Length: 257
Image 1: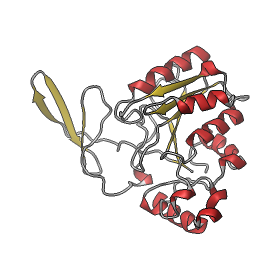
Image 2: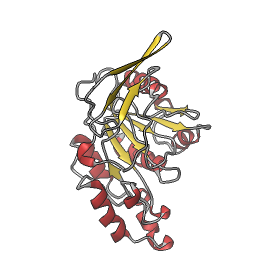
Image 3: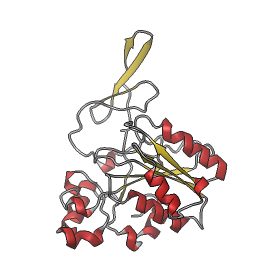
């Protein structure tokens, strides 16, 4: 499992304006050489091919100037389907709820299953959980409005200290917009094979299953260190409640793990 902080590069605008009827779309070249644009209220994004998983040292920093009275500190939890995002949400809720005012938003494409799972297992009072059915939208990066609404509502209703936002099942290239998440955790699991870190998957969970699926944790740790360039990650099993205290510390002071 990894805490990581990149989505959009630190943009240096070289504006090019394209007019289409009454609308105008501005594009610019980011420091990674890719052309970015923003339109229809979407967050800045590029449609150019991505040739690498990026670099931890070039990740976009948190938006320190944003108003935390409008929306509390928000933790984004992402990763492919079945890696343990909802299990981590449940564990974090139980671990942190006595110390902080919490609320949670879950994303599913066509169901509300993950939110219902949290409610059924008593993660938080039901009124503090929102299950968002996103449809086929990039609801954590390009079109974040569907998540911002319930997060801001929960933040104001319950004077939240921390908001947890779980993405729907994503591919390895998906990540949270910095306009949505202040702190980002991305999860992969060992059952996907020990080659995932070197293919760009930055974190490792379900380590207790490694012997059953023939995954070599030493290989995964080696490759994660290389791909993360020294950035924080940890090998853990959420069901064994490993490292939850480190996540708590890391959210207070990013980079501690």
